[in-house]
Amino acid sequence: MDGVITDLIAVGSKRGSDELLSSGFANGPFTMSNSTPATANGNDNKKFKGDRFPCSPSRVLHLRKIPNDVTEAEVVSLGLPFGKVTNILMLKGKSQAFLEMASEEAAVTMVNYYTPVTPHLRSQPVYIQYSNHRELKTDNLPNQGRAQAALHAVSAVQSGGLALAGGPAGEGMLLPGQSPVIRIIVENLFYPVTLEVLHQIFSKFGTVLKIITFTKNNQFQALLQYADPMNAHHAKMALDGQNIYNACCTLRIEFSKLTSLNVKYNNDKSRDFTRLDLPSGDGQPSIESMAAAFGGPGIISTPYGGAAGFAQAIGFPHSAGLTMQAGALGPLAITTSAMAGRMAIPGMAGMPGHSVLLVSNLNPDAIIPHALFILFGVYGDVHRVKILFNKKENALVQMADATQAQLAMSHLNGQRLHGRVLRVTLSKHQTVQLPREGHEDQGLTKDYSNSPLHRFKKPGSKNFQNIFPPSSTLHLSNIPPSITDDDLKILFSSHGCTVKAFKFFQKDRKMALIQLGSVDEAILALIELHNHDLGENHHLRVSFSKSTI
Image 1 (cartoon, rainbow, N blue to C red):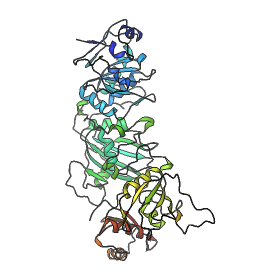
Image 2 (image 1 turned 180 degrees about the vertical axis):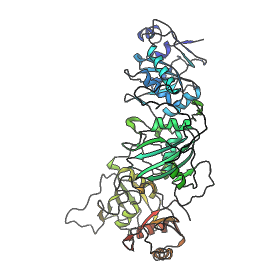
Image 3 (image 1 turned 90 degrees about the vertical axis):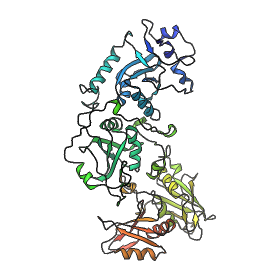
Image 4 (image 1 turned 60 degrees about the vertical axis):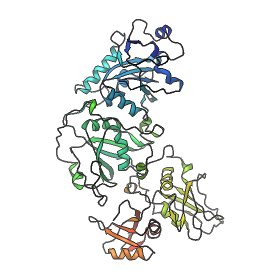
């Protein structure tokens, strides 16, 4: 038997006709089909009290905290990326609305997405949950004309007839023959965006099959292939123009002319998630795929998938989910793969008080400021280093910002340097003070603010894409043509390293990989040989590598 809506629009403790009259719906009844037993008071609004009692999935969704001036079309637009919206009920006096999706699957996908990603209407957060009811019946409800008009407009968009008001024609519809491959350009690349980061973000919209990342026209770009064109369609609609991190790393998304990507290597630059047997290669994406991305028409035979073609979103942890407020996708959840992808820590970016690190358990007989500058400089630009005068086992390292400090801490804490296990934590200090004039400290404090050796001073630098944990394999670059593999092996051996393997890059002999006896050896070699003069105006650049030889 249909349940009356009275219980749904009552916010306070009172229930009954008073709420029905005050809400403006006394002139005619409207009902919702309810196939499940009512809860204690049959009230979807229990969550207003702060307790979140879960409801079983339903294709009817209950939206709370709707701004009074919001339109039906704006509310409908929240459900549009997830499937067809079949009905809407606005309760503006109560700042609530009910949205009915065509299928329970679409509603589940929508709730899974918006649980960690709080949507905003008119800059105000809106909260979405399942309703206790299974169907909206508003046929006899007055003042539903605008709501039905909004639904008709959306239906026209989904069938290819119209575009939503305020948007370009065709923005909301899946075109016949549309590719499952999208091209992603990251503008204003201030913090690192890697293959792992992209996979975590775009997996929210369906199964990601392949990713290729590359730099073109000094821009970090990627090609990403979904299992279904509908996945690509929804991802573009939701993410185009969004920022990954606050005020930077803006996503620009367009459909590729490719119908499939040809990935030859699984590494930090390219990945085929359907082929775990692929070799790692030299860390370079497939040249054929990159070249084909910008030319040649493509035809895809996969038909329009509708809501059923939209793979269920993969939920992020609620405590560290994406937020779309102010056009940003960050902060992102930190996972093992994300940490390898050098993602920013939620709430840390832009806080200068957290850009200073305390490094302890140093070897006082061996440590100098320059060593810490080079080592920590792998993960960010080091501005100042101070070895404490009375406690030389401890030092302060000031990074350019909080994100770089977090990266350095996450990668270097627990590593060994000069036979000691490093302990790296955030310092309470806001900045590293330089000694006053006339007060020398035996060279224990150094200012590197204007050092030419900073790796990340240029926004969008490729170095952001090549940050890895310490490893026994080092990546060497800027090698002059006259230098042979024997020259480099001898150089590293002369600094006490055991050279286990060496390999020039096939396509670029300015770069090479060298594998040493241990991670400890590689750390010391990087400190001692980064910026080593190889002659011919070439200074060796040394980084940790993710590859093996």
